[in-house]
Length: 200
Image (cartoon, rainbow, N blue to C red; front, side, top):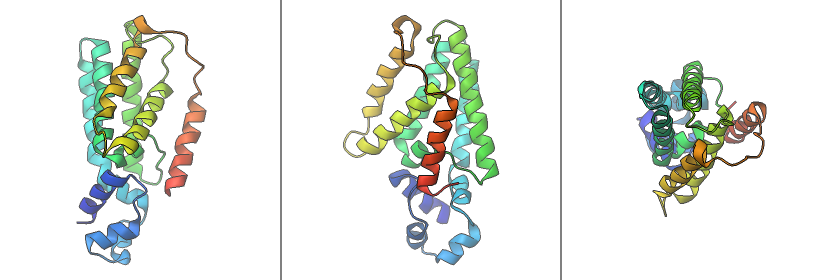
């Protein structure tokens, strides 16, 4: 009951859903909640581990796609669709959450798979040559913000955003872009977001 309640609240509100509220809605005391999940990270891991496994499985399908661009585009769309249906996952994909080894391992694998998917599309000549891994993080951050702001009023707005973004990532449509903020800067942004939400 605790995990189901947390999944629902995270899905509606994001990863900042309070522990106290989760316990109250689940009908348990705070002591019981902390006995089962001694940290916020442990509860997040219980809620999202299966979804991260789905992402890893989806990455395998994308890498098997004979068309590298289609594999890349379908994986980006899959990630953004998951974000659009779950505000908690929208946060998780763009936030550093430490303290749950299984979750960290799955997140690392999902990230590495996405890098391979992008590398393959770029090597084929379909994905713009200046695409770097943190560009996917930028895209997911932008989509997460969109999801949080339009979930009730325009729940399908993400579709148009991703269509426009993917067109801009094609080599044929590429124009000179501003420099990447870099991996270290994006990691700092994700870590700060994690601290702001009470993780890490």
